[in-house]
Amino acid sequence: MAMIAIIDYNAGNLTSVKRALDYLGLDSTVSADPRVLRSAERLIFPGVGHATSAMTTLRERGLDLVLETAFTAGTPILGICLGTQIILSRSEEGDTPCLGIIEGNVPRFKLTDPALKIPHMGWDSVRLVRQHPVLRDIKPGDEFYFVHSFYPQPSDPAAVIGLGDYEIEFPAIIGRNNLIALQFHPEKSASAGLGILKNFSTWDGGAC
Amino acid sequence: MLSKRIIACLDVRDGNLAKSVKFVDTKDIGDPVAAAKRYYEEGIDELVFYDITASSDKRNIMIDTVSAVAAQVFIPFSVGGGLRTVEDCTAVRLAGAEKVNVNTAAVANPRIIAQTAALLGSQAVVLSMDVLRTGVGARTPSGYEIVTHGGRTRTGLDALAWAREGEKLGAGELVVNSIDADGTRDGYEITLTRMIAEGVRIPVIASGGGGNPDHLYEVLTAGRADAALVASILHYKEYTVREIKLALRKRGLKVRLAE
Image (cartoon, rainbow over all chains, first blue to last red; front, side):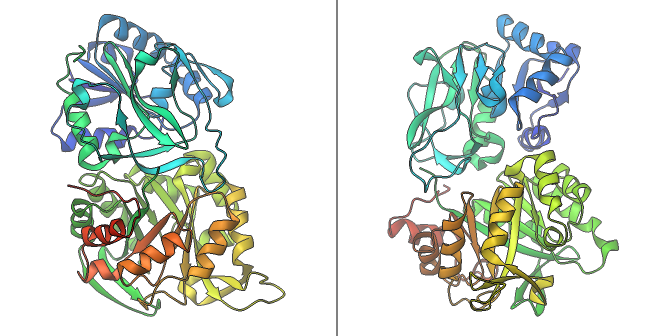
């Protein structure tokens, strides 16, 4: 049994996440098999791509149910990028109904400054609004690699853990119970990102 | 607010690191994987590998290099040079590159931009343009022309028009490489970079001519670039990544400093 299972739903950066875990010496597997995913100690839900096609693939493979069950069972879950967005109830991208594990929606950036480009792509900092065991090594000034045009907006402000700033403040890290989800890519964020993956590997799913 | 990105460019020939000067003489100066690791540890924001291998039967060496880098370097990097088809692009992505870099192939067949963007997403497609200053003419109203094959072939394409066409086709970023400035270390082509950056809504990476941190500062401010490519000043150890970034931060730019 692999300690960490990376959920395979044809969504881009799976191998990058796997490589980062390998580098850290963490046992992991990439799988679309509900049985493998159910037996994992923890799940990573990554993703790059379009919300509509991601949801279609998840449902076809029965992985939406796997995620919901794992969440209810208390399995530690880490969302990344598109994975983070489709955890919410609905995405503006293709007006797509999503998983709804955290209530809220996923709006597109609407910026007034013409010099600011969409997607928000590159290195940026995150301001933590509350502490979290997975984020305990983040220091002020640490930066993370973002690539996104949409951002997660939970209905309940208590689900927001960290904020990014791109003309507006937007939730960059969200979470609820045993789920933590990042809008940026820890697997492409050098040592600051690898630190998050390492801490996730020992997180029991509990709060601070 | 996003940090300005500093991107190290590594020209790779037959698996070895090379640096071209005015795209004519190239001489191998080391191991690309070791160099990538060193720049990563110094805090480089991104890497670009250009495969300048001449013979196609040695192309698989590049895939091995990409895999070796991806196993040790956890920042985005792109691969360009010799990518002719969507399949070529997919192969380097699978080997671990975040982005693919198309140049000559896109001039010959612009649809490769749209096809690759449809498959991998625009964020994974970088259009690299080699640009020659020609002066304003009937075919080149911007005063700059796109060239290919390392600058040896004129295309007749206007640089600004091509940049906008690339954006429309789905490129997620543009590398604007000045043939005139490349290898000179006299500074980036500010006029060109600014014109392109103000003419598109996607990030622009300035390339060619970076010789010291002040050059980077100029192109990232007056030149309106989102990122700057550096090569020889790192490869010949004239500056470390950290030294460049400290100098930029001292002048007020937001840059990421690794520990």
